[in-house]
Amino acid sequence: MMRAALAIWILSAVICVGRGHHQIGHDTTGQDTVLDSSANSVSLVTSANKDFAYRLYRKLVAHVASEGKNIFYSPFSVSIALAALSVGARGETHRQLFSSLGFNSSLLTQTAVDQAFQMLLQRANKTSNEDTREGTAVFVDHRFKPQPEFLEALKQSYFADAFNVDFTETTDSANTINKYVEEKTNGKIDKLVENLDPSTVMYLISYIYYKGKWATPFDPELTKEDMFMVDENTKVPVQMMNIEKNLNTYYDQGINTSVLHLPFNSSYSMLLLLPDNMATLENVISPSHVTKWLKWMKSRTHKVYIPKFSIKASFSLNNVLTEMGITDIFGDRADLRGISEGQKLTVSEVVHQATLDIDEAGATAAAATGIGITLMSLRHIPVLKFNRPFMVIITERSTENVLFMGKIINPNI
Ligand SMILES: *[C@@H]1O[C@H](CO)[C@@H](O)[C@H](O)[C@H]1NC(C)=O
Ligand SMILES: *[C@@H]1O[C@H](CO)[C@@H](O)[C@H](O)[C@H]1NC(C)=O
Ligand SMILES: *[C@@H]1O[C@H](CO)[C@@H](O)[C@H](O)[C@H]1NC(C)=O
Ligand SMILES: *[C@@H]1O[C@H](CO)[C@@H](O)[C@H](O)[C@H]1NC(C)=O
Image (cartoon, helix red, strand yellow):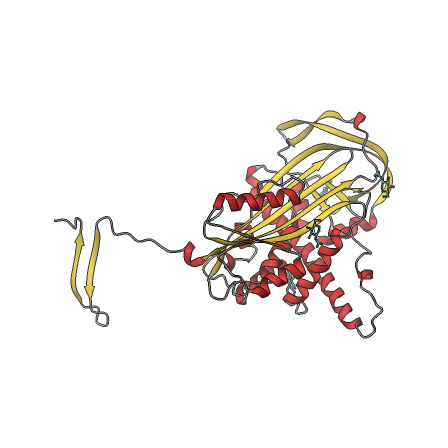
């Protein structure tokens, strides 16, 4: 297993061009304005999601830099989960979510964002002859009654499966959630949730699973053991695949990075980026780089070596999201009145896990995001127990005149 930060971006939404817009029928006259505005919100949301992906990447790098860990995650899964949470957020809590997700155009109301995700989710599931699966689910404690409009919006726009669970049975309910995610990700993510907070009343999940075959597979006979340079002083053995053929590449001189384009047998591709200096690349990479690379890359014969591997990455996103400006959801300022008006809710955790397997035939990637929502009143009943020496003061409130004062060190004498 490699410890180096492997810079691999799977471009899913990015390369899925030329689809979708045509699905909308133009046969009903007078609907064009509606259709134009929903196509417009899809493109605004898609563009926001792309920007969010790179901002999130830089935050993750900053958080795991010292640990020498791989980074692999699904920005789309995180965006979906937070957009679904936004449905129930109000006031400043909602503003923070929208602004950090990049949904700050005045055209992007919650309804417009919901419709955009509805289209993006539908589109993803429709990719022909590929195994792509995306979806959401919401697990609700059987005693907790969320606002019906919240659940309705989640089912309508985010295709959420809804389940009733008993969250006081923390092990059973965690197992139920983990089994669901395991099934949806074909066994790739089997333990998303651990140590559930017993005051959880709702758990939101988004998952994504992708399995693609290379347009040109590698020959397993050519795969040989080779060394991977983790850093100047560390080498690790890997199974190195190789291929010699016409491939699309680009050398970005501005950041001294070689880009290899490996298409899957579909509308998806993998871009592999090999920089001279990882930090230079990480600091600047943006959606416009990808646009440039895809546009200008040239086909020529190359001999390419890529390791065969399976990795798994796991993150708690609480700190990362807080640094990105999503602060209120995690504390007593959380305004989730769209989920419940009567009960004060807060977000206890946002967790994310992802896996990537690359071999001669293709690549499989899976990810899931989980958002735990807890009841504030249960969560924060502070305990104050005067079971050791304490002081007392008896005072008149307006004058603050001290009538009595003392120290109790043993109430029994
Ligand atoms: C939205 O936010 C981004 C990043 O914070 C900013 O660059 C952009 O100008 C903002 N757009 C609007 C319409 O406020
Ligand atoms: C996508 O497919 C999965 C599994 O077949 C299903 O559970 C999910 O609801 C689908 N999502 C959409 C948006 O159709
Ligand atoms: C790219 O490499 C060249 C030659 O080694 C060097 O002069 C230049 O400073 C590098 N550029 C960056 C952005 O690192
Ligand atoms: C790619 O997909 C096409 C059409 O579905 C199929 O005929 C072909 O065999 C596939 N190639 C590979 C390498 O899987």
